[in-house]
Image (cartoon, rainbow, N blue to C red):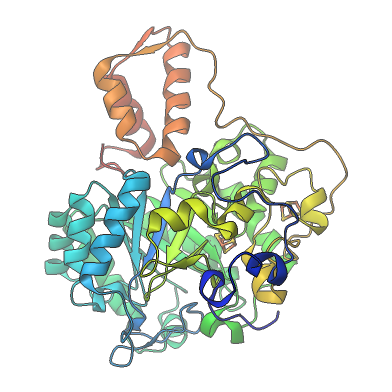
Length: 461
Ligand code: SF4
Ligand code: SF4
Protein backbone atom coordinates (compact mmCIF):
# COMPACT_ATOMS: atom_id res chain seq x y z
CA UNK A 1 0.00 0.00 0.00
CA UNK A 2 1.47 3.34 -0.99
CA UNK A 3 1.80 6.48 1.04
CA UNK A 4 -1.20 8.63 1.71
CA UNK A 5 -1.40 11.95 -0.04
CA UNK A 6 -1.71 15.39 1.52
CA UNK A 7 -5.06 17.12 1.29
CA UNK A 8 -5.16 18.43 -2.26
CA UNK A 9 -7.34 21.39 -3.02
CA UNK A 10 -7.87 21.44 -6.76
CA UNK A 11 -9.49 24.86 -6.71
CA UNK A 12 -6.70 26.55 -4.84
CA UNK A 13 -3.62 24.97 -6.36
CA UNK A 14 -4.64 24.54 -9.95
CA UNK A 15 -5.12 27.24 -12.56
CA UNK A 16 -8.74 27.91 -13.57
CA UNK A 17 -10.30 26.22 -16.61
CA UNK A 18 -7.45 23.87 -17.46
CA UNK A 19 -6.69 22.76 -13.96
CA UNK A 20 -8.79 19.71 -13.68
CA UNK A 21 -8.37 18.27 -17.12
CA UNK A 22 -4.62 18.72 -17.17
CA UNK A 23 -3.91 17.39 -13.73
CA UNK A 24 -6.51 14.76 -13.14
CA UNK A 25 -6.97 12.01 -15.65
CA UNK A 26 -9.52 9.92 -13.82
CA UNK A 27 -12.54 10.75 -15.86
CA UNK A 28 -13.05 11.54 -19.47
CA UNK A 29 -16.18 13.61 -19.84
CA UNK A 30 -17.72 14.41 -16.50
CA UNK A 31 -20.41 17.08 -16.84
CA UNK A 32 -19.76 20.32 -14.98
CA UNK A 33 -21.58 20.97 -11.71
CA UNK A 34 -25.34 20.80 -11.84
CA UNK A 35 -25.56 21.44 -15.58
CA UNK A 36 -26.09 18.85 -18.24
CA UNK A 37 -25.69 15.62 -16.32
CA UNK A 38 -25.56 12.97 -18.98
CA UNK A 39 -27.70 10.38 -17.23
CA UNK A 40 -30.67 12.62 -16.46
CA UNK A 41 -29.91 13.16 -12.79
CA UNK A 42 -29.33 16.63 -11.42
CA UNK A 43 -27.73 18.04 -8.32
CA UNK A 44 -31.10 17.64 -6.58
CA UNK A 45 -30.62 13.88 -6.77
CA UNK A 46 -27.54 14.15 -4.59
CA UNK A 47 -28.24 15.43 -1.11
CA UNK A 48 -25.83 14.98 1.78
CA UNK A 49 -27.28 12.37 4.16
CA UNK A 50 -24.16 12.26 6.25
CA UNK A 51 -21.58 14.96 6.89
CA UNK A 52 -18.60 14.21 9.10
CA UNK A 53 -17.32 17.33 10.82
CA UNK A 54 -13.72 16.70 11.88
CA UNK A 55 -13.69 19.83 13.97
CA UNK A 56 -10.37 19.37 15.71
CA UNK A 57 -7.12 17.50 15.28
CA UNK A 58 -6.52 17.73 19.01
CA UNK A 59 -6.80 14.45 20.83
CA UNK A 60 -6.24 12.98 24.25
CA UNK A 61 -4.99 9.73 22.67
CA UNK A 62 -2.45 8.79 20.03
CA UNK A 63 -4.01 5.93 18.11
CA UNK A 64 -1.91 4.09 15.56
CA UNK A 65 -4.62 4.14 12.91
CA UNK A 66 -5.84 7.76 13.15
CA UNK A 67 -6.45 9.11 9.66
CA UNK A 68 -6.09 12.69 10.88
CA UNK A 69 -2.54 12.25 12.12
CA UNK A 70 -3.92 13.69 15.34
CA UNK A 71 -1.44 15.67 17.35
CA UNK A 72 -1.50 16.01 21.08
CA UNK A 73 -4.09 17.96 22.98
CA UNK A 74 -1.71 20.86 23.39
CA UNK A 75 -0.23 20.82 19.92
CA UNK A 76 -3.22 20.92 17.61
CA UNK A 77 -5.77 23.40 16.58
CA UNK A 78 -3.98 26.49 15.33
CA UNK A 79 -5.88 26.68 12.02
CA UNK A 80 -9.11 25.06 13.17
CA UNK A 81 -12.37 26.61 12.09
CA UNK A 82 -13.51 29.10 14.70
CA UNK A 83 -16.82 28.71 16.52
CA UNK A 84 -18.37 31.30 14.23
CA UNK A 85 -17.03 29.56 11.13
CA UNK A 86 -18.53 26.30 12.39
CA UNK A 87 -21.93 27.97 12.90
CA UNK A 88 -21.78 29.43 9.39
CA UNK A 89 -20.84 26.03 7.96
CA UNK A 90 -23.77 24.37 9.73
CA UNK A 91 -26.15 27.04 8.41
CA UNK A 92 -24.84 26.42 4.89
CA UNK A 93 -25.29 22.65 5.18
CA UNK A 94 -28.87 23.35 6.29
CA UNK A 95 -29.49 25.07 2.95
CA UNK A 96 -28.69 21.82 1.13
CA UNK A 97 -30.26 19.35 3.56
CA UNK A 98 -31.33 20.11 7.10
CA UNK A 99 -32.38 16.46 7.46
CA UNK A 100 -28.91 15.02 7.27
CA UNK A 101 -26.93 13.41 10.02
CA UNK A 102 -23.99 15.44 11.32
CA UNK A 103 -21.21 13.39 12.86
CA UNK A 104 -19.12 15.62 15.08
CA UNK A 105 -15.71 14.09 15.46
CA UNK A 106 -11.98 14.81 15.47
CA UNK A 107 -9.31 14.05 16.78
CA UNK A 108 -11.31 13.83 19.96
CA UNK A 109 -14.18 16.31 19.59
CA UNK A 110 -14.82 16.62 23.32
CA UNK A 111 -11.36 18.12 23.76
CA UNK A 112 -12.46 21.19 21.82
CA UNK A 113 -13.76 23.73 24.38
CA UNK A 114 -16.63 25.11 22.27
CA UNK A 115 -17.81 21.75 20.95
CA UNK A 116 -21.03 21.65 22.95
CA UNK A 117 -21.98 25.13 21.71
CA UNK A 118 -21.43 23.94 18.15
CA UNK A 119 -23.53 20.81 18.78
CA UNK A 120 -26.25 22.98 20.32
CA UNK A 121 -26.30 25.22 17.27
CA UNK A 122 -26.59 22.18 14.97
CA UNK A 123 -29.43 20.62 16.97
CA UNK A 124 -31.29 23.94 17.11
CA UNK A 125 -30.90 24.18 13.34
CA UNK A 126 -32.78 20.89 13.05
CA UNK A 127 -29.94 18.46 12.39
CA UNK A 128 -29.59 15.01 13.82
CA UNK A 129 -26.27 15.15 15.64
CA UNK A 130 -24.06 12.32 16.84
CA UNK A 131 -20.51 12.29 18.18
CA UNK A 132 -17.65 10.01 17.18
CA UNK A 133 -15.47 9.79 20.29
CA UNK A 134 -13.07 7.61 22.23
CA UNK A 135 -15.48 7.91 25.16
CA UNK A 136 -12.87 8.84 27.74
CA UNK A 137 -14.29 12.28 28.46
CA UNK A 138 -17.87 11.13 28.88
CA UNK A 139 -18.84 11.10 32.52
CA UNK A 140 -22.35 11.49 33.98
CA UNK A 141 -22.22 15.26 33.63
CA UNK A 142 -21.14 15.15 29.99
CA UNK A 143 -23.64 12.42 29.07
CA UNK A 144 -26.44 14.40 30.72
CA UNK A 145 -25.45 17.56 28.88
CA UNK A 146 -25.31 15.79 25.54
CA UNK A 147 -28.81 14.44 26.17
CA UNK A 148 -30.06 17.88 27.18
CA UNK A 149 -28.61 19.44 24.05
CA UNK A 150 -30.46 16.83 21.98
CA UNK A 151 -27.46 14.87 20.69
CA UNK A 152 -28.86 11.60 19.42
CA UNK A 153 -26.01 9.35 20.34
CA UNK A 154 -22.30 8.65 20.42
CA UNK A 155 -20.12 6.13 18.62
CA UNK A 156 -17.38 4.84 20.93
CA UNK A 157 -14.35 3.02 19.55
CA UNK A 158 -13.20 -0.28 21.00
CA UNK A 159 -10.26 -2.04 19.36
CA UNK A 160 -10.01 -5.16 21.46
CA UNK A 161 -11.71 -6.91 24.34
CA UNK A 162 -8.24 -7.25 25.83
CA UNK A 163 -7.72 -3.94 27.68
CA UNK A 164 -3.97 -4.14 27.26
CA UNK A 165 -4.20 -4.51 23.48
CA UNK A 166 -6.68 -1.64 23.27
CA UNK A 167 -4.49 0.58 25.45
CA UNK A 168 -1.32 -0.15 23.49
CA UNK A 169 -3.12 0.59 20.26
CA UNK A 170 -4.63 3.78 21.64
CA UNK A 171 -1.30 4.90 23.01
CA UNK A 172 -2.51 5.47 26.57
CA UNK A 173 -2.81 3.33 29.71
CA UNK A 174 -6.41 3.13 30.96
CA UNK A 175 -7.88 4.08 27.56
CA UNK A 176 -9.99 0.91 27.72
CA UNK A 177 -11.22 1.67 31.23
CA UNK A 178 -12.01 5.22 30.14
CA UNK A 179 -14.00 4.07 27.12
CA UNK A 180 -15.97 1.59 29.23
CA UNK A 181 -16.66 4.23 31.85
CA UNK A 182 -17.94 6.47 29.06
CA UNK A 183 -20.27 3.73 27.81
CA UNK A 184 -21.61 3.16 31.32
CA UNK A 185 -22.22 6.91 31.72
CA UNK A 186 -24.17 6.88 28.45
CA UNK A 187 -26.28 3.97 29.68
CA UNK A 188 -27.02 5.60 33.03
CA UNK A 189 -28.12 8.82 31.37
CA UNK A 190 -30.13 7.48 28.45
CA UNK A 191 -27.65 8.48 25.74
CA UNK A 192 -27.69 6.05 22.81
CA UNK A 193 -24.33 4.53 22.01
CA UNK A 194 -22.86 2.51 19.19
CA UNK A 195 -19.68 0.47 19.23
CA UNK A 196 -17.08 1.18 16.58
CA UNK A 197 -14.54 -1.55 15.93
CA UNK A 198 -11.70 -1.15 13.42
CA UNK A 199 -10.73 -4.50 11.89
CA UNK A 200 -6.95 -4.84 11.87
CA UNK A 201 -4.46 -7.71 11.71
CA UNK A 202 -4.10 -7.60 15.51
CA UNK A 203 -7.79 -7.90 16.30
CA UNK A 204 -9.94 -9.13 13.42
CA UNK A 205 -10.13 -12.64 14.83
CA UNK A 206 -11.81 -11.24 17.94
CA UNK A 207 -14.84 -10.15 15.95
CA UNK A 208 -17.24 -12.96 16.98
CA UNK A 209 -16.55 -12.17 20.64
CA UNK A 210 -16.82 -8.43 20.04
CA UNK A 211 -20.22 -8.88 18.41
CA UNK A 212 -21.46 -10.90 21.37
CA UNK A 213 -19.98 -8.42 23.84
CA UNK A 214 -21.50 -5.38 22.11
CA UNK A 215 -24.90 -7.06 22.13
CA UNK A 216 -24.66 -7.95 25.81
CA UNK A 217 -23.65 -4.38 26.53
CA UNK A 218 -26.87 -3.14 24.95
CA UNK A 219 -25.46 -1.51 21.80
CA UNK A 220 -28.06 -1.06 19.09
CA UNK A 221 -25.44 -0.70 16.38
CA UNK A 222 -22.03 -2.26 15.84
CA UNK A 223 -20.04 -0.62 13.07
CA UNK A 224 -17.05 -2.60 11.90
CA UNK A 225 -14.66 -0.25 10.14
CA UNK A 226 -12.14 -1.33 7.57
CA UNK A 227 -9.16 0.93 7.59
CA UNK A 228 -7.81 2.89 4.72
CA UNK A 229 -4.13 3.26 5.52
CA UNK A 230 -3.79 7.02 5.64
CA UNK A 231 -2.73 9.58 8.25
CA UNK A 232 -0.83 7.88 11.08
CA UNK A 233 -2.41 4.63 9.87
CA UNK A 234 -0.31 4.67 6.71
CA UNK A 235 2.45 2.97 8.65
CA UNK A 236 0.15 0.10 9.57
CA UNK A 237 -0.54 -2.98 7.55
CA UNK A 238 -4.11 -3.64 6.57
CA UNK A 239 -5.75 -7.03 6.80
CA UNK A 240 -5.38 -8.95 3.56
CA UNK A 241 -8.12 -9.20 0.90
CA UNK A 242 -8.68 -12.82 1.95
CA UNK A 243 -9.12 -11.75 5.55
CA UNK A 244 -11.51 -9.02 4.40
CA UNK A 245 -13.61 -11.61 2.66
CA UNK A 246 -13.58 -13.78 5.77
CA UNK A 247 -14.63 -10.93 8.07
CA UNK A 248 -17.30 -9.59 5.72
CA UNK A 249 -18.74 -13.07 5.22
CA UNK A 250 -18.93 -13.46 8.98
CA UNK A 251 -20.75 -10.13 9.34
CA UNK A 252 -23.31 -11.06 6.69
CA UNK A 253 -23.94 -14.43 8.36
CA UNK A 254 -24.09 -12.99 11.84
CA UNK A 255 -26.61 -10.21 11.23
CA UNK A 256 -29.43 -12.78 11.10
CA UNK A 257 -28.65 -13.89 14.66
CA UNK A 258 -28.88 -10.40 16.17
CA UNK A 259 -32.20 -8.97 15.11
CA UNK A 260 -32.07 -6.15 17.69
CA UNK A 261 -28.57 -4.95 16.85
CA UNK A 262 -27.57 -3.56 13.49
CA UNK A 263 -24.21 -4.98 12.43
CA UNK A 264 -22.63 -3.19 9.52
CA UNK A 265 -19.32 -3.02 7.78
CA UNK A 266 -18.03 0.45 7.05
CA UNK A 267 -15.69 1.21 4.22
CA UNK A 268 -15.64 -2.23 2.64
CA UNK A 269 -18.43 -1.80 0.08
CA UNK A 270 -18.08 -5.33 -1.28
CA UNK A 271 -20.01 -6.25 1.87
CA UNK A 272 -22.98 -5.49 -0.42
CA UNK A 273 -21.80 -8.04 -2.96
CA UNK A 274 -21.42 -10.74 -0.29
CA UNK A 275 -24.84 -9.90 1.16
CA UNK A 276 -26.40 -10.11 -2.29
CA UNK A 277 -24.73 -13.45 -2.99
CA UNK A 278 -26.25 -14.79 0.23
CA UNK A 279 -29.71 -13.32 -0.26
CA UNK A 280 -30.70 -10.82 -2.98
CA UNK A 281 -33.72 -9.82 -0.88
CA UNK A 282 -32.11 -9.43 2.52
CA UNK A 283 -32.52 -6.18 4.49
CA UNK A 284 -28.79 -5.52 4.03
CA UNK A 285 -29.05 -5.88 0.29
CA UNK A 286 -32.02 -3.60 0.07
CA UNK A 287 -30.78 -0.95 2.47
CA UNK A 288 -29.46 2.08 0.71
CA UNK A 289 -25.87 3.26 0.78
CA UNK A 290 -24.38 3.71 4.21
CA UNK A 291 -27.19 1.93 6.05
CA UNK A 292 -26.60 -1.07 3.85
CA UNK A 293 -22.85 -0.97 4.31
CA UNK A 294 -22.22 0.64 0.94
CA UNK A 295 -20.27 3.77 0.12
CA UNK A 296 -21.84 7.21 -0.06
CA UNK A 297 -18.61 9.16 -0.59
CA UNK A 298 -19.26 12.26 -2.63
CA UNK A 299 -22.81 11.27 -3.51
CA UNK A 300 -24.46 11.58 -0.11
CA UNK A 301 -21.47 11.87 2.18
CA UNK A 302 -18.79 14.48 2.76
CA UNK A 303 -16.25 15.38 5.38
CA UNK A 304 -15.04 18.78 6.54
CA UNK A 305 -11.47 18.85 7.88
CA UNK A 306 -10.54 20.89 10.97
CA UNK A 307 -9.38 23.76 8.75
CA UNK A 308 -12.40 23.70 6.44
CA UNK A 309 -11.52 21.53 3.45
CA UNK A 310 -14.46 19.61 2.01
CA UNK A 311 -13.58 16.06 0.95
CA UNK A 312 -15.76 13.15 -0.25
CA UNK A 313 -15.06 11.08 2.87
CA UNK A 314 -12.80 11.10 5.91
CA UNK A 315 -10.25 8.74 4.36
CA UNK A 316 -9.94 10.71 1.15
CA UNK A 317 -7.63 13.72 1.44
CA UNK A 318 -8.94 15.16 -1.82
CA UNK A 319 -10.48 18.56 -1.34
CA UNK A 320 -13.19 20.11 -3.46
CA UNK A 321 -12.31 23.45 -1.88
CA UNK A 322 -12.31 25.21 1.45
CA UNK A 323 -15.41 26.50 3.14
CA UNK A 324 -13.46 29.59 4.21
CA UNK A 325 -13.31 30.53 0.54
CA UNK A 326 -16.55 29.14 -0.86
CA UNK A 327 -19.82 28.19 0.74
CA UNK A 328 -20.63 24.56 1.45
CA UNK A 329 -23.56 24.93 -0.95
CA UNK A 330 -21.30 25.87 -3.86
CA UNK A 331 -18.72 23.21 -3.08
CA UNK A 332 -21.33 20.48 -2.67
CA UNK A 333 -23.27 21.41 -5.77
CA UNK A 334 -20.61 22.54 -8.23
CA UNK A 335 -17.50 20.52 -7.61
CA UNK A 336 -15.94 18.50 -10.43
CA UNK A 337 -14.47 16.21 -7.80
CA UNK A 338 -17.87 15.46 -6.30
CA UNK A 339 -19.34 15.02 -9.78
CA UNK A 340 -16.74 12.35 -10.48
CA UNK A 341 -18.29 10.32 -7.65
CA UNK A 342 -21.83 10.97 -8.86
CA UNK A 343 -21.24 10.03 -12.47
CA UNK A 344 -18.29 7.68 -12.06
CA UNK A 345 -16.35 6.08 -14.88
CA UNK A 346 -14.97 3.22 -12.83
CA UNK A 347 -11.91 1.46 -14.13
CA UNK A 348 -10.52 -2.04 -14.00
CA UNK A 349 -12.63 -4.79 -12.57
CA UNK A 350 -14.91 -2.40 -10.67
CA UNK A 351 -15.87 -0.87 -14.03
CA UNK A 352 -16.62 -4.33 -15.48
CA UNK A 353 -18.30 -5.70 -12.41
CA UNK A 354 -21.95 -6.71 -12.33
CA UNK A 355 -22.05 -5.41 -8.72
CA UNK A 356 -20.77 -1.93 -9.51
CA UNK A 357 -24.21 -0.33 -9.02
CA UNK A 358 -24.64 -1.66 -5.49
CA UNK A 359 -20.99 -1.80 -4.48
CA UNK A 360 -18.62 0.16 -6.70
CA UNK A 361 -15.65 -0.51 -4.44
CA UNK A 362 -13.88 1.87 -2.09
CA UNK A 363 -12.59 4.96 -3.89
CA UNK A 364 -10.20 5.98 -1.13
CA UNK A 365 -8.03 2.88 -1.33
CA UNK A 366 -6.92 3.33 -4.96
CA UNK A 367 -6.59 7.04 -4.26
CA UNK A 368 -4.19 6.73 -1.34
CA UNK A 369 -2.43 3.87 -3.10
CA UNK A 370 -1.68 5.54 -6.43
CA UNK A 371 -3.78 8.68 -6.76
CA UNK A 372 -6.53 7.33 -9.05
CA UNK A 373 -9.76 7.20 -7.11
CA UNK A 374 -11.74 5.69 -9.97
CA UNK A 375 -9.48 2.67 -10.30
CA UNK A 376 -10.45 -0.79 -9.10
CA UNK A 377 -10.58 -1.66 -5.42
CA UNK A 378 -7.78 -4.17 -5.03
CA UNK A 379 -9.03 -5.25 -1.62
CA UNK A 380 -11.92 -7.13 -3.25
CA UNK A 381 -11.25 -10.67 -4.41
CA UNK A 382 -14.14 -10.89 -6.83
CA UNK A 383 -13.54 -11.46 -10.53
CA UNK A 384 -16.41 -10.06 -12.61
CA UNK A 385 -18.19 -12.64 -14.70
CA UNK A 386 -19.47 -10.30 -17.37
CA UNK A 387 -23.16 -10.59 -16.55
CA UNK A 388 -25.90 -7.96 -16.37
CA UNK A 389 -25.46 -5.20 -13.79
CA UNK A 390 -27.14 -6.13 -10.52
CA UNK A 391 -29.61 -3.48 -9.43
CA UNK A 392 -31.50 -3.31 -6.18
CA UNK A 393 -34.68 -1.31 -6.28
CA UNK A 394 -34.31 0.36 -2.89
CA UNK A 395 -35.48 3.62 -4.35
CA UNK A 396 -38.30 2.32 -6.50
CA UNK A 397 -41.68 2.57 -4.72
CA UNK A 398 -43.58 -0.70 -4.62
CA UNK A 399 -47.18 -0.69 -5.81
CA UNK A 400 -49.41 -0.66 -2.74
CA UNK A 401 -53.00 0.16 -1.92
CA UNK A 402 -52.12 0.96 1.71
CA UNK A 403 -52.37 4.63 2.69
CA UNK A 404 -50.66 6.57 5.48
CA UNK A 405 -52.83 8.69 7.76
CA UNK A 406 -51.65 12.24 8.41
CA UNK A 407 -49.93 11.57 11.73
CA UNK A 408 -48.08 8.51 10.48
CA UNK A 409 -46.97 10.37 7.36
CA UNK A 410 -45.61 13.18 9.54
CA UNK A 411 -43.73 10.65 11.61
CA UNK A 412 -42.41 8.91 8.52
CA UNK A 413 -41.10 12.20 7.17
CA UNK A 414 -39.14 12.79 10.36
CA UNK A 415 -37.15 9.61 9.80
CA UNK A 416 -33.74 10.33 8.28
CA UNK A 417 -33.62 10.24 4.50
CA UNK A 418 -31.34 7.26 4.36
CA UNK A 419 -33.67 5.12 6.45
CA UNK A 420 -37.01 6.39 5.22
CA UNK A 421 -37.42 4.28 2.06
CA UNK A 422 -36.52 1.13 3.96
CA UNK A 423 -38.91 1.90 6.85
CA UNK A 424 -41.71 2.85 4.43
CA UNK A 425 -41.45 -0.40 2.53
CA UNK A 426 -41.27 -2.48 5.69
CA UNK A 427 -44.32 -0.88 7.30
CA UNK A 428 -46.36 -1.08 4.09
CA UNK A 429 -45.48 -4.72 3.70
CA UNK A 430 -46.52 -5.48 7.28
CA UNK A 431 -49.79 -3.58 6.81
CA UNK A 432 -50.57 -5.48 3.60
CA UNK A 433 -49.81 -8.82 5.22
CA UNK A 434 -52.23 -7.96 8.04
CA UNK A 435 -54.92 -6.80 5.64
CA UNK A 436 -54.78 -3.20 6.90
CA UNK A 437 -55.64 -0.40 4.48
CA UNK A 438 -54.44 2.53 6.63
CA UNK A 439 -51.10 2.92 8.39
CA UNK A 440 -51.28 4.62 11.78
CA UNK A 441 -48.67 5.81 14.27
CA UNK A 442 -49.81 2.95 16.54
CA UNK A 443 -48.80 0.42 13.91
CA UNK A 444 -45.47 2.18 13.42
CA UNK A 445 -44.80 2.14 17.15
CA UNK A 446 -45.75 -1.51 17.42
CA UNK A 447 -43.38 -2.45 14.61
CA UNK A 448 -40.60 -0.36 16.09
CA UNK A 449 -40.91 -2.07 19.44
CA UNK A 450 -40.96 -5.45 17.75
CA UNK A 451 -37.77 -4.55 15.89
CA UNK A 452 -35.81 -2.76 18.63
CA UNK A 453 -37.49 -3.66 21.92
CA UNK A 454 -39.14 -1.13 24.22
CA UNK A 455 -36.25 1.19 24.66
CA UNK A 456 -35.75 4.60 23.16
CA UNK A 457 -35.50 4.41 19.37
CA UNK A 458 -32.09 4.82 17.76
CA UNK A 459 -33.52 7.80 15.95
CA UNK A 460 -36.01 9.98 17.79
CA UNK A 461 -39.11 10.54 15.74
S1 SF4 B 1 -14.45 5.90 -0.41
FE1 SF4 B 1 -13.86 4.15 0.84
S2 SF4 B 1 -13.23 5.04 2.79
FE2 SF4 B 1 -14.44 6.59 1.73
S3 SF4 B 1 -16.55 6.30 2.46
FE3 SF4 B 1 -16.30 5.11 0.57
S4 SF4 B 1 -15.78 3.06 1.28
FE4 SF4 B 1 -15.38 4.47 2.99
S1 SF4 C 1 -14.97 -5.77 -8.25
FE1 SF4 C 1 -15.36 -3.70 -7.45
S2 SF4 C 1 -17.56 -3.34 -7.82
FE2 SF4 C 1 -17.19 -5.55 -8.01
S3 SF4 C 1 -17.66 -6.39 -5.98
FE3 SF4 C 1 -15.45 -5.98 -6.06
S4 SF4 C 1 -15.19 -3.92 -5.22
FE4 SF4 C 1 -17.37 -4.17 -5.75
